Length: 277
Picture (cartoon, rainbow, N blue to C red):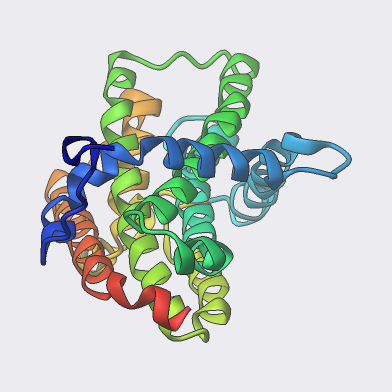
């Protein structure tokens, strides 16, 4: 073997940091693999499989419709109450599932993280994609409800991808925070279910934001999911629901802050994951 045939490996200080965002693209096949593996394993050995993605939000929608629509008789903005609820259930279930999946994603892939280099951002990112698949499957129920009630959305439905993107940003931002914190503080495995349960009651899932007194709406809008849910309803229900644009912009700014800070904190603590995990 001549000298020219030899291959040199040069390790430069800081090179990994410089190439990190390029590595996200280079390791895209690992991203696809992790997402596909989790999708396959999620409902493996269950009797009804992916149908759970339909049953859980459907039953929640039924309970909320009975409690808030029939018993409490809250206003439905002129649309069938089940559609009002399910238009909010879609983004909320996506967000809640993403939090649960992301918070445990690094712990669940501890062997991989401790042995192989790759951008760790891929792990919680793939977990959010798994939750997004459930979101798409659950959308079948909304289509069925619209067909049942002969409800036809107007032109605003074309803006729905924008609100899906905002929901994705909120889920990813919060998920990155919890994923990183759960590596260092294992208490978060108990805190996350509480956050999800508490968030369900302080978000306008079973009711419309219009019932919140005006003097409390600014504070209420500090919950980033308020803007996401109101945006979904505005896009899906059309002119039946008005969007409070100043409050929505506030929620949108909070989602952007949540996403940016989540990426910052995750990157800040990422290099310690292999040692702590």
